Length: 296
Ligand code: OGA
Ligand code: MN
Figure: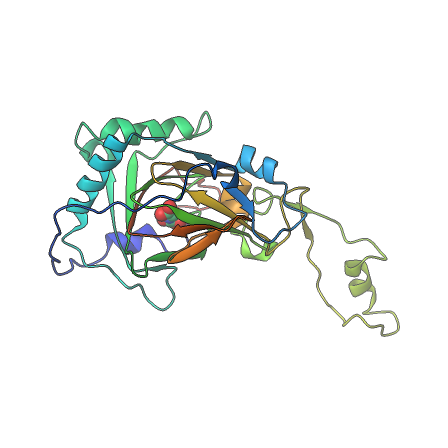
């Protein structure tokens, strides 16, 4: 995300908040709604959902067992319970949350296999960071607003594991000028040379030609969305059930903003009710590409 993990690590210790005995899991939306796991929320014709789902966004339901979910949730509940939920600052994309970052090796041995299994979801050759970033969103108003993860902290993949509550994750196609500099092609944009006669050519010509209805210098994008990747602004909703793992990769990671919605949402054409309760997610990432995020 545009905010960085550095912010988290630099934070002063917060006052201890009382811990309740155990985290309360949410009621799940009715099963049988599996076909709705990926939903073109703007009914936009240019998003190729099967392509999106097969290459750039994958959800694997029941990635962990109920026992693993319980043990992981309890562990992170206890680890985080000394922190108060942070409301976030005016410019932050995350609201009412607490978080922690730790090395896999620091996890109790019994919990490690579930987290290490996430490594199997990376594409071959990925340089997996052996760290887990846990985010606890409050039930009342915790949410993560749309953002693209910073290229300083993360490579081609963002992989998450969902505990305690279902959630709707909303993907919104970012415009070429909204994606991180240098990632336009990875974000599914292709560069086009402005042709005489098209808008860009007309804009260039308008400086010398008689004034037309095109403002002089009116810039048009040089980047156009690759087929099937969706037009800027189009949204795709994903239902993330408890115990599911998701993978954002390539265009799904660089070319779309993602958000974790709060409150009660209606998902898909059948309007399945999804009540976002307290949710803990465990995120693993791969190493940042140093060409995109030079070390300073
Ligand atoms: C993030 C993020 C999603 C989640 O930490 O950048 O988008 O599932 N998290 O918590
Ligand atoms: Mn993110």
